Length: 391
Image 1 (cartoon, rainbow, N blue to C red):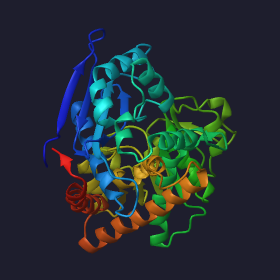
Image 2: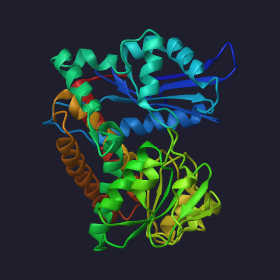
Image 3: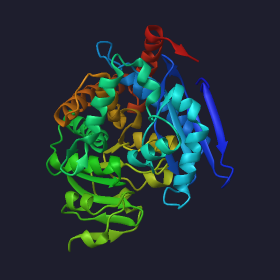
Image 4: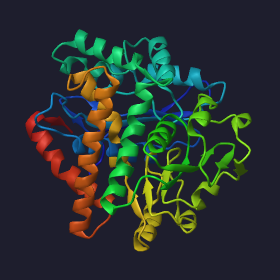
């Protein structure tokens, strides 16, 4: 694997905490990837995420679309987002990497950071926008920015469209896998780790598709009910970090330890929180048939090999959580600032991609991840030849 184009480590002069930025590659001089904040974030983690972003962009390449795939990048800050010093640290980090945000790196919310917090910090750091680097690639910048602002203003049943698109993609990935296996949606059980932006939206779409959400884990523990949890009530009772107020639980709901979601009696597991949550020990507790990686890099390679050997299919993050690319479709004008268009385009794109990956995996006798990587790695040179790159 090639080395990234840029890899930097920043040390905050006030707290000594570290932040990272990795640019895996540029396409037409621009790259894309979110900014995460979590205690224990490392350069290796951010490097892997940046490489994954390059592959996600490649997997959604459509020669007929206005949207031009960008290069992959990622930012990370080693700090608990609940720490009182976290916001000031975020602003100082953005000031330090300001030249990259201005010239080549488009970013936004990721684990531990919401888009409104990122936007506020971006303004305080003296930047125009977290995606200003892509503006020169737009045919009509003012129209594109207006279209994106309108999309961010859309709410669906009390949740912003920007928070829902990624989860819509995760849910469609699961539904595609079920349909290929001939498994009905109604009554299929699912357990999730995380009820933040991605996990919460995924839970909503799966529940509305007929699946039964039997377990949800947050920082306080696992909430479970074999008969099914009230997803909408849990969503309404969560805070900005996805932690559920336990006063919203119903009499049949139980509280178990934080890792109990792993062994829940469910056909589908959705890790939608932290990276590296499923290792060799954790995988031994899993009885589910599918694991859909809504989080980035939640399943360690050793664990995935063991899961694959016993027939558990890991639907990889590089595919499953790539639905957030819908915002590029909106920005470039492939779809309008409309929830119906966003969901229809996301479902159509994700279903086609998951079907392609699973078909390739079956044909090659390999894992869905290896199949997805093979497809992406075939497309990256095609993108580079058409649009150029700077490596």
